[in-house]
Amino acid sequence: MKIAVDVMGTDYGPAEIIKGVLQAVKEYGCDAVLVGDEAVIKEELRREHEENNPHVTIHHASQVIEMKDHPGISVKKKRDASIVVATDLLRQKECDALVSSGSTGAAVASALFGLGRIKGIERPAIATVIPSLTGATVLLDSGAKVDAKPEQLVQSAIMGSVYAESQLGIKNPRVGLLNIGEEETKGNEQCLATYPLLKANPHIHFIGNVEGRDINKGTVDVVVCDGFTGNVVLKTMEGLGSAVLEIIRSAVKDSSFLSKLGALLMKPALTEVKRKMDASEYGGALLLGVRAPFIICHGSSKAKAIKNAVRVAIELTEKDIVGKIGREILRDEESGEL
Image 1 (cartoon, rainbow, N blue to C red):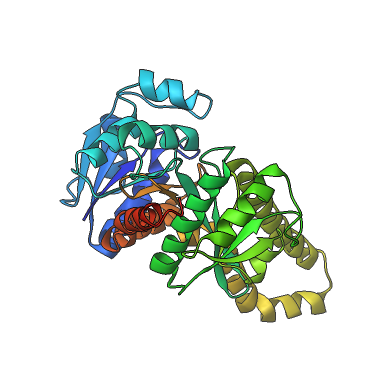
Image 2 (cartoon, rainbow, N blue to C red; image 1 turned 45 degrees about the vertical axis):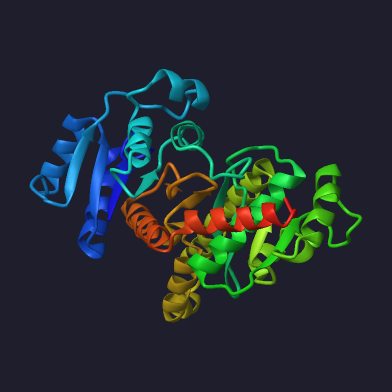
């Protein structure tokens, strides 16, 4: 198993990415190709005393697509950008999967132009795993494309179901359409047009409309929406989670001795809560609908998140998530559901 890792264009620079890759190589027994500025990568490897690691190779890329750059234009103009070069390694099957924590837009554009879509898929979607009271919920799309047609949301439901069953072990996953109410007549034109299509599809376990609060309750396994809505939901949850933990930390710091003692006794439980809410545990989000496993991490990902992203990349490759999605889409096309 060989994983391509784009080490450029992140918030913390290549150091954290390389640390995470080295941890993954050691723990999971895979090989990794570090794509980016060769001199910078070599220096970081020397700093970690891993310059002679036989499981890590370097593939030089002279350019970087920054967060401020226009994704589509940059991918076409910067042909030696790290994400473009890493995607080309994946397309040529020199690597089995790809992990990137640079610009999400550039990653999506590079995957579309460099890999292409699975046959039958109109638009890829980013699937993000969100902690819930009963385990986890898959939210998609969380940012690959801001708008979506009803037929594309149906495809997202199929892809999300395959992902939830294969990766999370959820049998016959429950699919909900994110809306402002549970009633079938609620929502904008997009939701009103999508609802009957999901309801009529026999290959989707559709349970109806769900609201934002249902995502964390564990009453639904896959939640579908357009990328604009999904990204707002995701960022809101990230901000709320951080705020809650900070509020608890501040309250304990300013409390009485007895309260601090109680917090000390509660520390193991609070640590477990923090772990379950930690996005780095899930190792990034999968871009579903393209022809190879493509993991997109947060720009502020640290070593732990990258290590787990490599783990997810290995698991998705072994479970042939791309092939399973292709077969499900083909089945729906042949039955006339798409």
